[in-house]
Image (cartoon, rainbow, N blue to C red; front, side, top):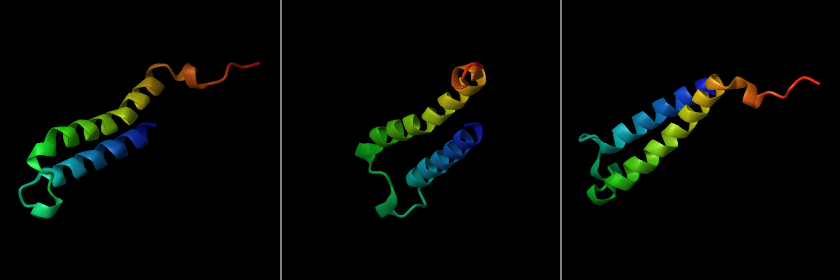
Length: 68
């Protein structure tokens, strides 16, 4: 979960940065009126795996079955 969270975080950061960069062609950039929706949805998508990894590290016994 930790590796996956890191990979998703890095990919989302790169995707968001490239979609809003000035040197990106205009056809691939996020329009000004959709910027807030784009940023919010991608931020939530990036935070999901981060929160799962935090949960795995915080309480690992939650995901393990008790011994018989």
